[in-house]
Amino acid sequence: MSEEVLEKYMKAGEIACRVRKLAHAIVKPGMRVLELVERLESEILSLGGKPAFPINVSINEIAAHFTPPPHDTSVIPENSIVKIDIGVHIDGYIADTATTIVFDPRYERLAEAANAALEHAVKMLRPGVRFSEIGRVIEATIRSYGYKPILNLCGHSIDVYTIHAGEAIPNHYDLKNVGKLRNNRAYAIEPFATDGVGLVDETSVVTIYALRYNPKKLKGLSLESQTFFNRVFRERRTLPFTPRWYITEVTNIDNILRQLSLAGLLTEYPVLVERTRGVVAQFEHTVVVYRNSIYVTTSSC
Ligand code: MN
Ligand code: MN
Image (cartoon, rainbow, N blue to C red):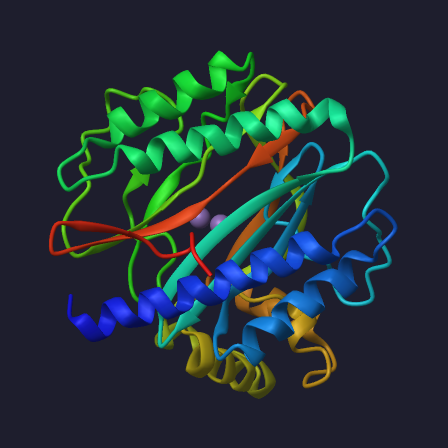
């Protein structure tokens, strides 16, 4: 990793941090979720970044991966707990950060548990630290508040234009995970806490997609689908996107996505819900390990 790359990670992190602050300032019960994400996504652009993925707004028992579809009319409910997950990239160097906002005092300690877990995890980071140790600290912190970590959601290594680069950082003490924090790498740490059983399931709702690169399979598709694929790939490679971004450009995006999916050219990210409908809190930072130092790219702005 070069100094220049570190600077891009830091810039992406600063923008993500500013957008997270803006989210805290504007999100209120009654606000349309669509208005919220559009304001946050346009803030990313005006600060000089690009979205690394669509803004996720996951409410109550929804843990992750919801962004409003086009023309969505849903609003932030009263007495809710809202996770906002923000991704920014500069030339493919990604910052991934999330926060939880509570509109009911009964959820405050749950949010505090996830936040404390993230703080404790970040404090112990150094080159060589085992992912299982990070998971142990996250789990112990969340359990000390009387809640459970979500076992099947993890932090992850990050690479250029790649949000989930292959390594998982568990949110529980998982001795099977033999990974270690390494120099010149980027990672997202993201504890999820719940008052439910501590597992998420996929729902049938999908609002976030990513392309899978396989030029051979593109050949048999309609010209319209090929054009869409090439246009999105040029801009985003395999970073996630949402149909909401393209409805003014293509008339039948659902059709195109169906074709791409059938051809194996699409990854789908279903909305994830807590198995027992427990409510969920999440906090997340991105860290870069550069020349044996830890940079929490999304913590200061
Ligand atoms: Mn995230
Ligand atoms: Mn993440």
